[in-house]
Length: 113
Image 1 (spheres, helix red, strand yellow):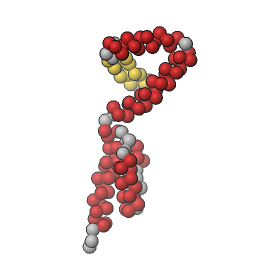
Image 2 (cartoon, one colour):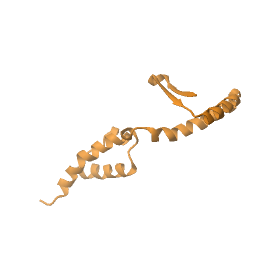
Image 3 (cartoon, one colour):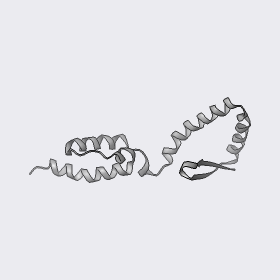
Image 4 (cartoon, one colour):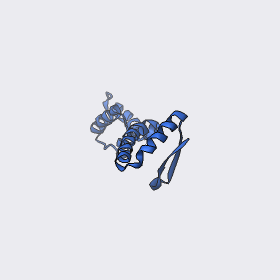
């Protein structure tokens, strides 16, 4: 069975293939969703699970930067008096670029003359 995640705003449709045992369980769950309260509760549970799972499934460069990256960027930012770009605070790949660009500048500034 296929399950589709659809985001009309992004013009996105992703087809997910479920193994038979999950298809059977989902069919049973679907029968219970005639009640609005049950459907809302199921949607909330599913949303919470997707919020946890989707970030792990993303490509590395569009995940959030690691706490270590952010800490190091803050040190470099203060040391070099440069702002951290908003993109770097949102995406690991952009943060990596910021760190690579400023790491050498930091070393050069600390090196004895």
